[in-house]
Image 1 (spheres, rainbow, N blue to C red):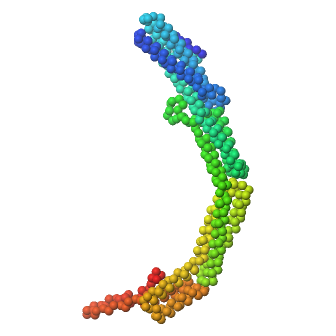
Image 2 (cartoon, rainbow, N blue to C red; image 1 turned 60 degrees about the vertical axis):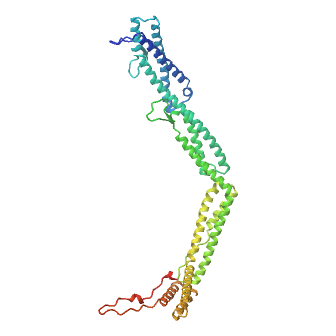
Image 3 (tube, rainbow, N blue to C red; image 1 turned 135 degrees about the horizontal axis):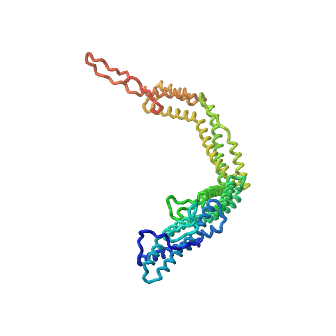
Length: 453
């Protein structure tokens, strides 16, 4: 299709341009013509447009590029019409050095009026041809250029950003898969092996989709009308990269296990051995407590953790067979459970020996009060001697009744406190008619507590 240039419908009352107005208008239109031509040539040579022309497109990109390609073709048609109109106006201006009245009228109509007939411009029932002024023609070209450039720039930005990054990630994925196989992580045998297969399939499908439908991965900037305003949507790529990072960390953990598994197994054996020894000590102590302490509930002591020993043997076998991916989670579980077993054994020993600790505390308290009585010069007091002997006999006999022994110690403490209390003071006679004050508390002996020793 080509533009047909001719005079438009005369505008009644329109001012006729003078020679200077015509020259300025031609100069301005010439500059616009050069700018439009430069933009169209740049669009024609744009790498994104060439890629779109040669690609097997699908989806939204195919739909938008079909419209944009038609718009670019239309742009060149409009530009040819614009060039013809400008050339015809220049020819009229160049007829005479000083244009005549008739020349100025015609130039006014061509430069300002709807003097450019565009064939085949009608759509959706509109006219099949329309007349446009040069200003309207430039505005029409600007709109088509912006919409076409937006498609080209967006597709080129996605193609420039995503495929290269996907290829780099695929290369890293290949190295990770080789490393995973070296430590026994394979699909169907380890979750990380399955993850690597999923990431491989995702990157393959993602790259094919990006090449065929780049605009499906374009996020337009909100509120921006500039061509190419937005950025590539890297959401799927980012998720695949994070998944690969997770797998790589898992493999690094397995590699760490390969490096220090021997030392960790030695430490595990040591912890479990200490737990066994502590439980054995608790069992021995329990027999001693049952023989020496009466009327006391002594908790039972569990046996050695055979299940942990079996798992420890399995871990050692995994190490011998270089099954590092199986050894890694087993070691972590064993270390946690071994520490818990040692803590439980220590708690069991503490609970079993608690009655012996109570007896030792009562013995210490009794001896402390005896020393205090001796300092006060009351070591020969018959009551104190009797109560001391009673308490000592209970505490140093087997089996020892802790409740009765504690009561005997308290009775000795009370007797010592009463013997060492000062006599009540003598008071002057009271005046006649005065009631004596209640001084019963002054003669009541102090009953010491456990801390008085």
